[in-house]
Image (cartoon, rainbow, N blue to C red; front, side, top):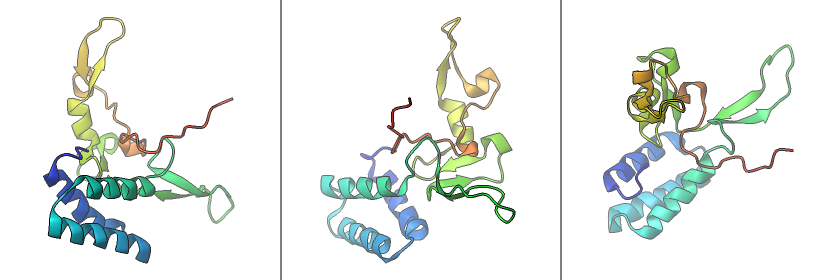
Length: 155
């Protein structure tokens, strides 16, 4: 996400208004930012406020979801999770290229076309598409945004 590009920020703000307000407090935050942008345009303070709000929505860890309950029983055979409001899946793409992040405004298929990987043996630089395998894992709800990484030290 380019926080300097006001067109990107406008698109993101529209998405937030339409999709993410889950309670009255969220709605008030979005409404305040929206009205100030309309009146004054984007500025450093509004960008900071928006970034703080976005970071509050993105789950902590490596995945585009957080666990709500890890209890498993006959009625719920899987742990209950809450998906990041920015994660989506495009039914028009192949399963392992269908993940999409509204925050980054990119999907697996776009990352696989553009993200460059280096072959450790040859030093050759290639995209996932050139290598011939889908390396972006948004479809499997693995983060590409790097927001709120899990910083706990592993023992």
